[in-house]
Image 1 (cartoon, rainbow, N blue to C red):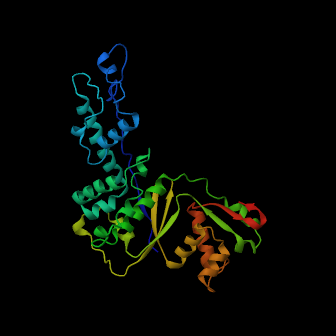
Image 2: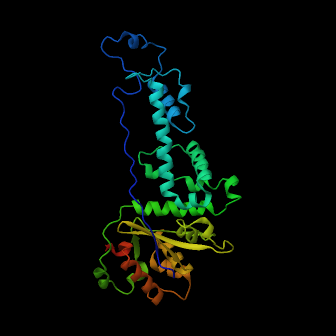
Image 3: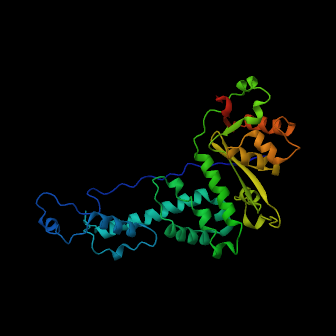
Length: 309
């Protein structure tokens, strides 16, 4: 089996913008009669102002089209000019977030096409998150669009792998299971045991060699030669310390992990895999030992005995 490949993420600076004193939108105060006179029944409501602001800073924003919002000029600069900074900044931060997560997708597409798709994605899936790391959660689904998938049917799966890597990096993993408590289990307990994995652990199946594409994401495109024909891959994604890892899995181990992650007992999964594997077989023992050694197991439960290790 291939050795794990590592995804290291640098610390990207996303400094917060500082709003000029007074903000873009006028506030009536003191005896500023020019502003007070605009506060009448025809003035835009807060909801209207918020909607207009969203239109001015979102994708395809055009601040020159702002007409009805009372913008406050400051230091000789018109409010409409100042709000354009936010429009440019919004898109720049979005591109940074998507590029950081989907480096392999960008490498495959090239910068121009990737940027065009990211712009279209931002229009279809406007961010509703405070955390920029979550901005691209719907990008794999977006890439299933027939106009994209017809030419590059593997692209959505590649994005799904990269999204899982990002989620593994940001997941809050707990202290790994202490294996000393396992020695007290009865032989029959292993059939009923449920294995609770760390939040960073996931598996995925693809009909395409997405792992191979992902691991060459930093190599020059002209040097990449990957056979795409009839090469499905099953991948384990997890984090160890401050690094997210990907590892190829053989079919049986993938199916076992897939079922255990879904809440099945070890006995149920052994039954699913057939007569050649049971809870005490050498293969299962080797897999379990490897998961313990990698720190992937958070806890074990035997619900019928109310045991949690």
